[in-house]
Image (cartoon, rainbow, N blue to C red; front, top):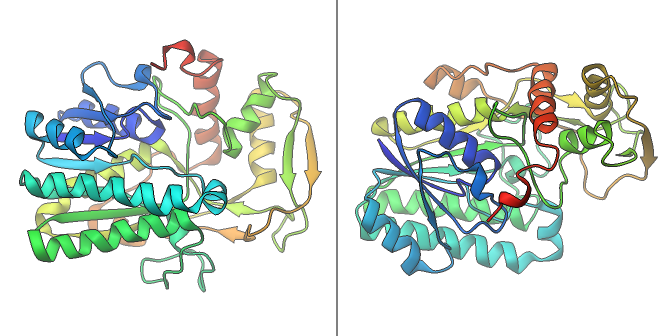
Length: 328
């Protein structure tokens, strides 16, 4: 299948592109390189530098390359920033996504995979979080993804568009060729590894008095290659209709567990500084995945925290400055 991947120069998008190509698909990457890296784009993918904010640019790309499906990763995705800059998320994420969907409808492209978020569930009543949990977005970022999900609901009714919405928490790890390189970096595992690499002095733990086994927050981490495989399985299943899945590793890991595992893998002491809690951080967030396992046979290949961190460590050791000066 020919697949257009928006945000295919970013972390999850580039590794999904790598997996798509490995499985025989053709890929066109559409990215404005705002956060993505040109060097992250697979050499066998067609690269189009363009901005979803300009509908003519995405419309031209779809008209020229005629994809059969779209995977949409391109979005502003920082929960904390969305609380400070709500219009950047509520307006730009939404408008850019709708520009993409309208261009698809104009050109008859009717398969859509949305990289959604488990931030749709701010205060879940059950843990792990299942698909039928009450949706109360936890931020303007989460709200922007929910708007995308609702738009897809209506486009199926009006244009016959089939879609899959995949909701997950923390992508982590790396493939052999591609990994996580954000500026600024805000994710725990790469931050911890930066300490081991001597690039920062310590790692901060935001609160150690939560009602969890070791007092630190528990979160769901999924290997990025397992996430990529879930997107590809969902794409193949669209012939049977639209669907929504929560993607969880099946278990959560605490901040202290992440740090301790990184110490074991790297051999570095990784100094810790305990700081006050961050506002809005729940004690435990873990997603369920029984539905996608049962319906599509998805089974994470790298479920252990050690495997996840080890793959990231190997990539960061080989790419001390991420993608470096090759970004543009």
